[in-house]
Image 1 (cartoon, helix red, strand yellow):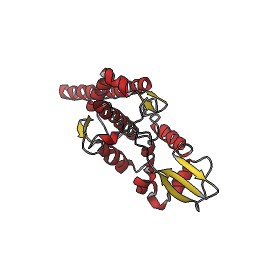
Image 2 (cartoon, rainbow, N blue to C red):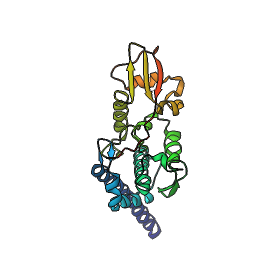
Image 3 (tube, helix red, strand yellow):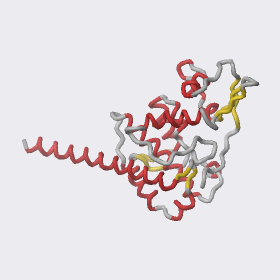
Image 4 (cartoon, one colour):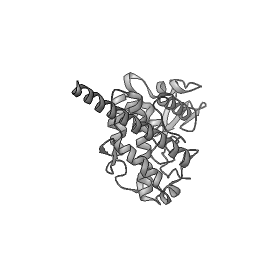
Length: 237
């Protein structure tokens, strides 16, 4: 009986410890984005001058416990962790004009997240795209450049992450991410859709099929699809 009680006590302590850590991460992330992101632009200089909030957030991200039993928590954590890590990488090298100015920014530099040392590419492709097969992640993972869909001024939360992803995808595909020329029967989209074409054309769909799921005004399937050059300049305030 004593062993059973001890097991239950240890389990509850671990469970509530994880829960409190998770709550603290999302609360701190939300406060961080609200304080440092305006209209998709990040206050990198101010964060570098006072990095206490970012460092606290990164410590919470490092000790966060990820369980594949709760998909919404996993999605929200990894999206926030990616965006926070991008900011950390830029702040560590600031002043910098573009994330590409730092060799290995996406594929060599690592961040301690949920007990692992991971690159940005690993978070995006292994922890999110490969697991969930959801192209909407390309509209919420922000690489620190103006060509990205804009970073939002709040954290992605487990209870709302799916709705937030939907909203950001709709904003992008009804906004500057896409340009329609009806006279020439042409639609020009961000190079993101070229780089990750296989994600947007899964299950036999075309890129226009994907676009039309989120467009207010649909694009005819006979329109020619082209790509405009990606803007790698830093998304700073």
